[in-house]
Image (cartoon, rainbow, N blue to C red; front, top):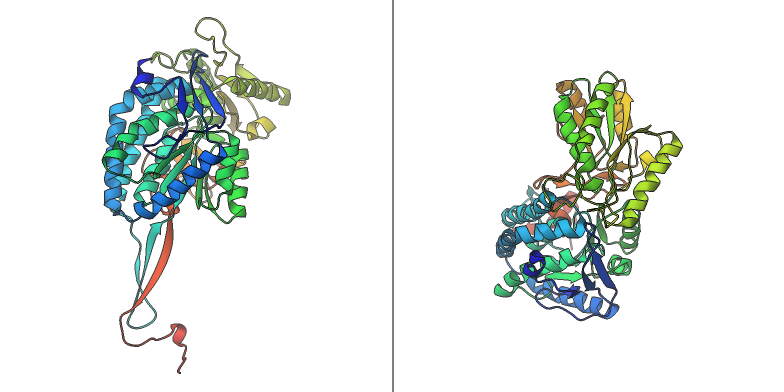
Amino acid sequence: MKFLKSLKLQATNNGVSTGVNWIKSNGEKLQSFSPVDGKLIGSVTGADAKAYETVIKKAESAFTEWRSWPAPKRGEIVRQVGEELRKAKSDLGQLVSYEMGKSLQEGLGEVQEMIDICDFAVGLSRQLHGLTMHSERPGHRMYEQYHPLGVVGVISAFNFPVAVWSWNAALAWVCGDVCVWKPSEKTPLCAVACQNIIQSVFKKNNVPEGVSCIIAGGRNVGEWMANDTRIPLVSATGSTRMGKAVGAAVGQRLGRSLLELGGNNAIIITENADLDMALIGAAFGAIGTAGQRCTSTRRLIIHEKIYNKFKDKLVHAYGQVKIGNPLNEKNHVGPVIDKDAVKMYLDAIEKCKAEGGKFIVEGGVLKGKGYESGCYVKPCIAEAKNSFAIVQHETFAPILYIMKYKTLDEAIALQNGVPQGLSSAIMTNNMRQAEQFLSQAGSDCGIANVNIGTSGAEIGGAFGGEKETGGGRESGSDAWKVYMRRQTNTINYTDKLPLAQGIKFDL
């Protein structure tokens, strides 16, 4: 495929890099099979212990120089990275689609997110400001400032194989940090491609080797990072189970963790909703990326007055969905990532039925021409109760659970009544309902939307969630502060030294 050649990908690729240089390793061989057609795209050799040590030492060394570069100069590097991503958008978008299975438009959209975060970070590089305040002591001034933190470890997931890395890297770089990236073992080629794209920028600008590192590999590499005291911050995206393990390991050594974990996202559809608008938000939220977004819509909480009407509209919409090769833009839904995901999908359906769930759109695995990979599944809908064990669990697949409510208080209680707290939405034209949903007595999620679905993130706003979603924030707002250490300074500009609280200490 042409885009593989353009991205300088080989049949066998090195998966360990410190920037411009690639490091030989004897680590785990990661084979990347496309869920689109089941074919082997290529393989990546992961990091062994020796290569890992080489990368971390190089990153540490690079940090001592990189932190001294003026922030706007670091921002200029990120600007140029954004320009290279613009040139490579079509090729990288196709790779994302082919290696992960999301639609081509979504793959291109993910690369656009990378470009957007670069633009955001460039502006940010001139706004890394603290506060100035008055001291209680006369002739003193206080201020706070932010300094680079050090080596930032990034552990990303398969569902957004390039965007999540860029959210972290672009902000960390302008903050003066260096990055070590462990990509998902299910999408390693996307990481190699990203490094290939940005190498020219780093080489041209004499960026220290070690500012942008890759250490491909399996779970063991992630464990090395989580337990490494030389990595003060580990940003991890993935399942709640994985996040708990990373958080515990990093916490044990009193490091920092930025966790972006599972979502069990709901849309409340009120009796005052624009049903056509609600349908678009719900359908894309549930089936986009084959239900493999952390912000995918898992639950619809529908007012009893419009329940049957909206259910019929939803069933009709699902009947229009085209499933097939995601590189064909006529198709709405591509495959799930692999056969393990298919098994998880089928198990969830059986568990739902066992608990009393009634499927109004049946699921199943597609077979025949165009579905040879065995990873294409039917988006399905079940009438269920929020209390079902399977509904409380996040299944990374296109399964939508729908349920009724009578009062908005009841709906909000259902919305909040799951362990996860990432994204939420309400569809209503009633201002009181919208404001209640957004109030302290409303959604308990990190993201709460009105008349827009749960799915997706927008550069500029802080992305993340509460409860078992981990509490981390990435991408926008003041998320940059997590990549820095804060320092409070007091300056005495007099020839006297008054002590705080009026304490007398005369010698």
